[in-house]
Image (cartoon, helix red, strand yellow):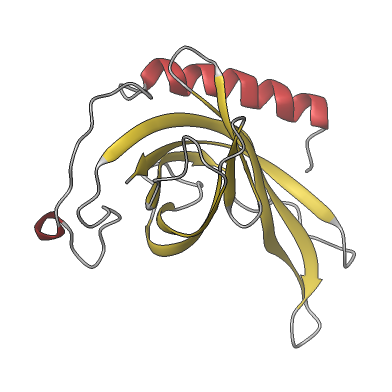
Length: 181
């Protein structure tokens, strides 16, 4: 069953407030450092990263219906679309395909996933460690080397089967994104 855009926005807004109230991290949290010794193969901790900020994301994961090699239709991940907020609820970044993050100051990063582990919440997208592989503009994202996606809620492919190639579907999700230099 697909949800309407209005329903999706209501779920996202409610979830963002809930996640923001539960999180103890904020964009002004003092920097924390991780070391290579603290990481393991299944870890999503960045090697020797210094924490810059942590933001709450509210958005959707978009999927498209595609045929596989045997011509069976299935949902395939297309892109995220999310807004990232600080602890006071102020919009700080936009998150989109790439995956990319862009700030109002014009700085932008594109990352690639280098590690993942299951979410702590059932039926949710995995937690990730992404490494920055391109940057643009000077600003708050210029020094970012790693991004963690943690505390994920929702975002899995639609539960309804896809029936027409090219059909799209989305699933609301919440997460915390932690940025490291």
